[in-house]
Length: 54
Picture 1 (cartoon, helix red, strand yellow):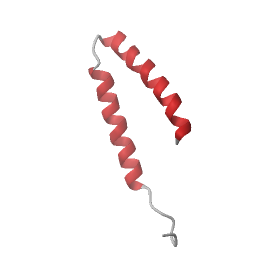
Picture 2 (tube, one colour):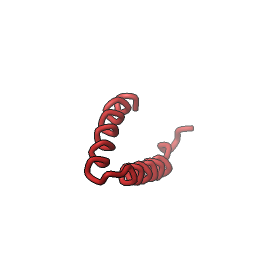
Picture 3 (tube, helix red, strand yellow):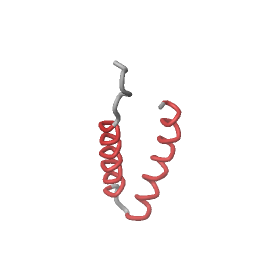
Picture 4 (cartoon, helix red, strand yellow):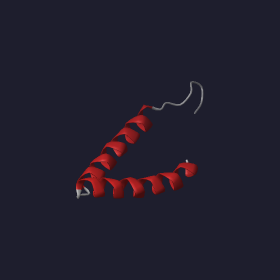
């Protein structure tokens, strides 16, 4: 998981700037973050432990 943090931060900063440059507002960037967090939380909630493990 830690391998995804660095590239995620770099891409997030770049994408936020690109969205701001294209729209003149950070609203689209915040909307994208909310959707990404919701998707991540949903996927984590759906993960189940393998049968037989505690």
